[in-house]
Amino acid sequence: MYDLIKFFKPAYLLELQPYTSLGTIKIMMIFFAVVTAIGIGLKIYERTAEMEKFRSKLLDKLVSLFITLGLLGIGLTWVRYERVQILSARFWLLVWLAALFAWLYPILKYLFKVVPEAKKHAEESRLMRKYLPAKK
Image (cartoon, rainbow, N blue to C red; front, side, top):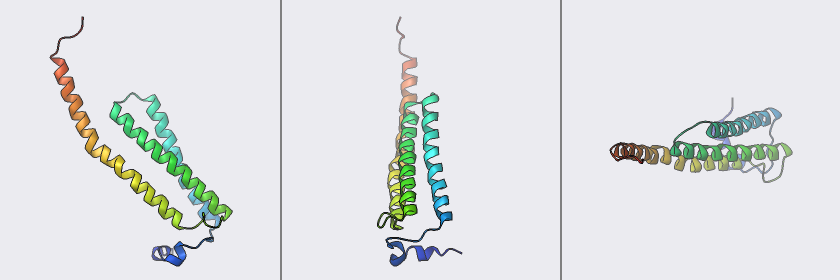
């Protein structure tokens, strides 16, 4: 069984050329390829579907998150496979994870704070326009 505590020990985490089995490389490659494919799928959905401006902007933010971090992850997997001295270190996976959370925070803030206010404002504007005279 894998010991998660062992992963966070500095000697293990900062090993410059860690041993990685081929099975781990395959799992990492599949995971990062799926993340990239989700980003591409969201981009295709965004271009084909009719949606509000704020939903389109949210999807655009998610597309950039998934594609960028997916391609970075594929790059990390490749340097791990090639056993590049410093770039294959395990702490890069923690940097990748920190980048994910740092990038996800503004997206979630936009989703839960900005979008409800924009929907409310759009609804008020639509109700206001209902009573204004139309152009002839």
